[in-house]
Structures are given as C-alpha cells and as structure tokens.
Image (cartoon, rainbow, N blue to C red; front, side):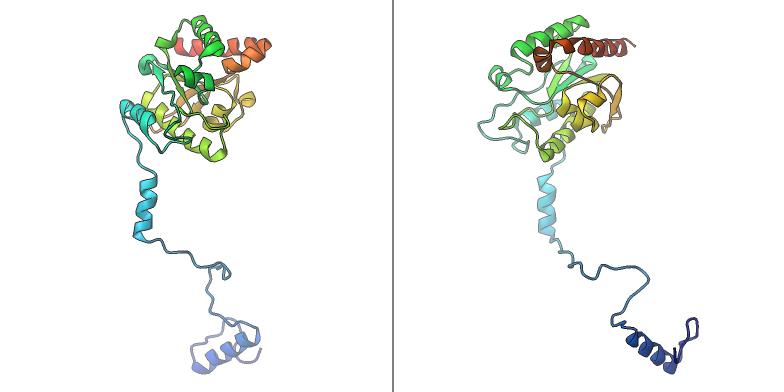
Amino acid sequence: MAGVEWGEDISSAAAAASALRWWTDAGVDVIVDEAPHDWLRPPAKAVAPAEMLSAADAAPELPNQLDLFQAYLAGSDALAFASPSAPRVCPSGDPASGLMIMTDMPTSEDCSANSLLSGEAGLLFDRMLAAIGRDRGSIYLAALSCLRSPDGRFNSEAAKGCATLARHHLGLAEPKAVLLFGDAVSKALLGLPMVQARGRWHEVATHAGPIKALVSLPPSYLLTMPSAKAHAWADLQMLAEELKS
C-alpha cells in the first residue's frame, strides 16, 4: 500500500493520515480494539437499586436451624405449589436417628391423612422398615416438596427450587445416610434417573458437607410391580450395612 507498511512507525502526522486513508479504503469505519465485541448486541439494561433489592427480597436466606427450617416449610408462602388452601405434609420422625428418607411429594391420600407414605403404600413401607430393624420413630421422613402439585408432577423449575430446599434440609439434619425414593428425587438431587442411580452409593452436596445417598424403588411402585421387591430388598440390605458401619 502507499504510505505506511505494517510495523512502520506512524507517529508522524503524515504517516497517521496515510494509515487512516488505508483503513478507510479497506472499509474500516469504526474504532476497534484487540478484544472482540458483539456490535449487534443491544446494550444491557441498567438495574436500578430498587430492582436489585426486589430480586434479593424474592430469594430470602433460608433458616439455618432445623426447627426454624421445619417452621419455614410449614408456613412459608414462597414454596412451590403453595396456596392458602393447599395442605402441607411436613417432615416427621427423629432427625437425630441417622437415617433420613425422602420421597417426592405427598399423594392425595397423604394430604388427607396428613402423613407421608400413607395407605397401602404406607403399610408396605412400615414392613420395609421393620425388615432392617427400624420404624417411623427411628427415621426422619421428609418430601422433596411438602405440597402436592396440581397435576401430581414436578416441572423443571419447581424441581430445581425443591432440590435447593432439600439440600439445605439434608445439611441441617446431617443424617449418616439418606434413602431417596423414586425417579423425581433421584433426578433432583443426583441428576440421574432412578434406573441409573440404583445399586450404588452417591453423595449429595450440602452446605454441611456431602451426605451419602442411596436410591430405591418407592413403595407405591412396588405395589404395582411386586416382582421388583427383590431389588428393593437389595437396596435395603446395602442401607442396613452402611448404617451398621
């Protein structure tokens, strides 16, 4: 090119003018720097302090004591599926037992009985506990959500919020092990479907450190698939061995 070659000193006014003419001829019509920029992206919206405060208020800090957290579950209107008329089935049993068992959400029958794992599924659950020398008084039983969704299912956003609460709950209870019943709980806390997670130990990360977790078939499933009870029994034996160690 006429004027300035690459690497030549362009400190003089004539050289700078020559370089600018070359850039203009080359089609360079904006100032650029060494870092790439997305010139077509709209400018980010500035967040006013009031908006930042609202966002912070929408995600309050969770109680850091178990009894206070239990009260939060029993009364907060910030929970997924909460409404003035929605029944809540809260945790039960002994948090100091060393064994926490978590299901997905109350069934309609549970909501009427005000107890998780009620009815025929509950009777089977009681027999499963007895098989490893436990009963409802010697476990801590909770749900991923203490409220039932209108359609009885988790959507992705609700599951994410419930998983956050469940991890916090686990960190406060600090059981030696947690038994996770079913696909929704396994996916929410381990990121794996039940069929892939079964048969081996996992860890659930919490603010108090990792909690050992085992996934098993829920009693409601075993009622419809009695042949799967052998798999559930294998899971219970793994759990019992861990609790004895």
